[in-house]
Image (cartoon, rainbow, N blue to C red; front, side):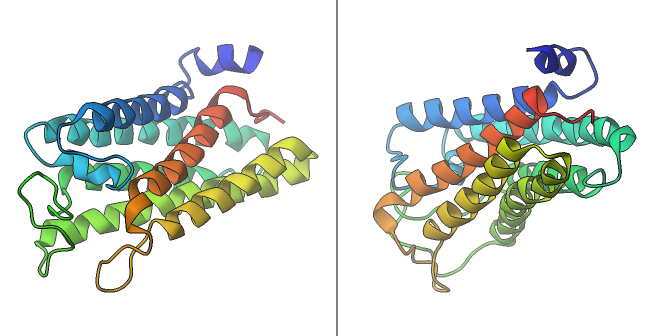
Length: 221
């Protein structure tokens, strides 16, 4: 609890708690109540399309700004405590933040029957904005794998076994769930019936670790 109080004291670490909680809460609630949207089958990015797409677009951008602030706070917190992870981890969090901002500004293309009326399946041609959205996704997920992996090295050097294991497991879960939710070169998902669910597992695992890092991790040693 002492670490949580420090994180809430105005040093920007609080943004690493608020951002992940906000992002996950919004896409879970909006995905559950959005007409014509199937959260088990469809990825989170499709929530940025349709009449209520502004909700998810705002969610991308606001969370990106919050995690950008957290990256600054993390750098400040790590720098006095030693070299290991003091640069790499904040940069990786910055990648997460930048990816969210890009995904918010450049939406994905309609596909797989969403918004309602869109033909089922992957479109044969994509607008440039959809490719930029993919760049944002790569930065986002890449950062969510790299950040716990980098911090695992720091925690191991500190002798923090529980945090080391948690960090490694997070990186593995994010990677495996993301891979399972991916598609072949034609755009056809490998597991089309559960793409949305698997992607949500990847996102939730990575952002839960970010929030725990900001609130409770032993960073001042």
